[in-house]
Picture 1 (cartoon, rainbow, N blue to C red):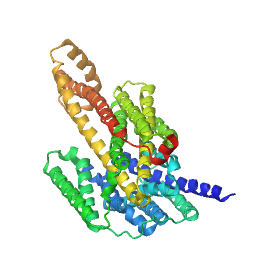
Picture 2 (cartoon, one colour):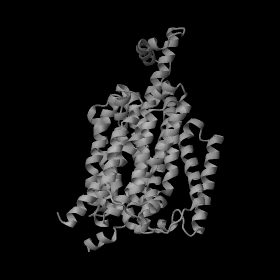
Picture 3 (cartoon, rainbow, N blue to C red):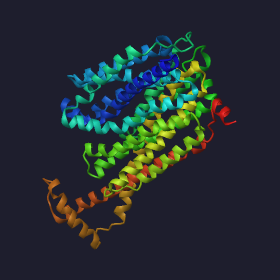
Picture 4 (cartoon, helix red, strand yellow):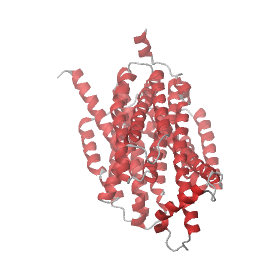
Length: 515
């Protein structure tokens, strides 16, 4: 075997190890939500307390991401990636053995510290291994796990929880994580970034983490606490102060945590912004869609998860193709096609109703999977190819931070929009359905036969049943309309990113090929 063939085999082997670890980490972040009700029963805690299982994970992973660039310089790609993978896998086993709610939250935080580094260092490692002209294909394969895992998480989580226990959603990581870790030890070679003199900007890191933690906490809890509450105002104040102080420090220190000159690179800054739009399209729809399937269409968690598999398959098949095309064609054209496809898919989701057939459920997911693949692989490739090689670890860290922030923004924005839309539709429908109408009493007479078994202990009169049924009927219809509006609203947000995408430039090696 020639040296070039050995090098090629090595690079693609390392890519497989990185992709597997990244997929496992992202999958775990989406698999837990389905098991939260079981954890409530197991530990006897309230819904507000159990949210710390996910909130603590989110905060811890956001806290580690900003210093991944510095850690890469000090430890090297191999040591940092495998250390992060080991921490994540070990903490997964400890989560499965948790004896109390407090121990579970603690081990979830440790788990998040590993997960928060796996994704950005994996992206940077892939970019380091592959030359610019083939990074698109490599990043497309690597990104398959990031895009497919959120769709597969609810299915796998529901199956494991229903057939085993909530602990199995953590213990399943042990064999996969250890196998990946051992393969990494045997196959990977140590690689260091070119800039070895970098020091840690500790104050910049502290203020950035303060801004990220406060901002993500506000986005996650705004709906429950109230967007005008003192709690959210305090979080917002900490976010603003943290960002202002961070920017001021970055302009003053010799070795900043983030070289702000990176934002003068058009493809990098645009890709970060477009990553937020992409995250809204991905996480917003992945958040709303399973709720619609379960609460409004009546599917169980496993049935809903099975119906979401086509979307994950579409992403898995399309990501390598989109990456291959990213090495050959303009990111502006490919990204715009992806935006149009993703926006169209969300408009199609806006046509769903509780009686929709299987084709109406599956086809929009396929469109969305294809669209998101073309929004990710070409745009990330354009961003990484545009920055200096020694800045790739830092650039990848902040690309992943923008993805996480965009996901939190997407869920908060669409959740708030859907909630308000449901209330508005309920009022409108109630006003248009007078209680004295013949249709009202005919409808309520049928509905009362269904709900009579669910209101034990009430004084059951015809009027009581009719009033209760009217509220249920109105609210059910309002929910359907609210979710439909939410999908369409998400599609509009995604479509609005087209002008930004068209501003992307072709990298130098593509311009040379085209001329």
